[in-house]
Every structure is written in structure tokens, then in C-alpha cells.
Length: 251
Image (cartoon, rainbow, N blue to C red; front, side):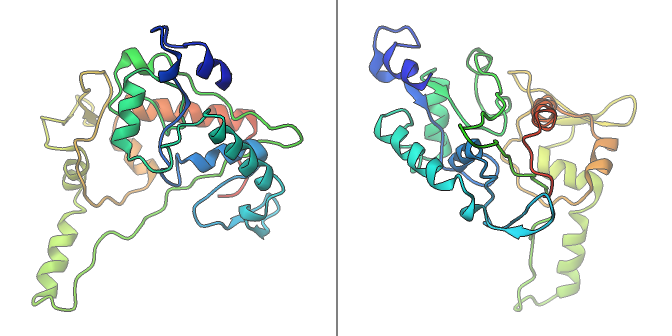
């Protein structure tokens, strides 16, 4: 399939040289190029330690399929089946190539709310990771847990005031506003007193570059917030992975 994208002028513009069979960025834990290793049963994660189905600690770096995965991905690079800039370009550069309609296959957390026009992202569909010959495809069991958020320095002259200021960031409306943008402009309370995020021009919800602290469980969040379209998209993918039996048992 990747060879066909490379050689057969997939976008129909008469120039078979501008197609990128597969591409995106190196990225990170949730949607980086190393997730191609999933095809060879390597449930990649960014700490290189995991629990197998029996609860035993092991390292994905010692997985049987890792060498073959690396060799195959290397060969795909050499054959120009993967964008050679994928390991060095930033997200903006990768998005520009996708938005131009030149990328056949990409690895992504989701397609909507990523700054991509509907005319482009509607041409893509999520696939279940295929199993390479002799292996069972495995995806990591990804679990979101609280990460470090803020610190008060040793030089702070009023620790109590600083702590109170940090505490106010965790008030419900402050968290929603800090993460999603100003109330009424980017979100509102509907008739059921649920937080509803306003759609963007492409019908999805895009966070406007906000950065804030948030702490609540998934159950709490979704009991108070109407699930946005891009979260629905990702949830559907997760259901499909689970039904296909390709997600590892333990997070």
C-alpha cells in the first residue's frame, strides 16, 4: 500500500514525487512513530518498563519483535516509504504536509481538533494495528495519571499566599476556563447545568493554546462536561482496539 502511495500519484496531481506514503512527527508517548512497533507485538511506552498479562515486570525493549520492527522501519525509511523528516520536524511542519493532502498514512491520537480541514481529515479512517507475520499486535494500555503541575520556590516570601493562589486554580470554573478558554466565548452551561464546549469552524473543539492545572477523575469530569466531538472520536477508536483484543491487559 505504501509503495502504491509512493509510485502511483495518489493525490492525482500528475506529480508522483510529492506524495508522502507515511508521515507525521517523532512526537511522544501517545502518538509517536515508535507505535509502529505495535505491529510486532511491542507495546511501546516512554519509560521502557511494563507489566505483562500475568503482572510480571518486563521491558518492551527486550520484546521478541523489536529487532524486526526496527529493521523494517529502517527499510521503509530507505525506500522513501516514511517521510525522512518525521524524526526531526515539529508538529507544525507535519500538519502542513497533512493539510496539503500529501500524506497517505499518519499516526495520530485523533484526526479532529488537530487544525486539519474536514476535506482532508474525512479522507482518513482509523485502522486496527495489523499483526506482522509471526506476531500479535499489541498497544500499550495507556492510563492518564496526575503529573507534576506547579512548585513554590524556596525564595517565595509569602508561601501561604502562594499556596492560596494555587488552590484557587483548582476551583471548578477556573479549571474549565484555564484549560478551554473564557466562559461564554469558548464554553457555557447548558440547560442541564452541564459544561458544553463551543464548536470551532470545523465542527470540532480546539483548545486555544491554554495551559492550566486540572485535577479531577474521568467520572467526575464527564458527569459535568458534555463530551466534545474530538473526545468521542478518540473513544470510538479505543472501543475498537479493545474489541479487537490488541490492548495489553495492564497499564
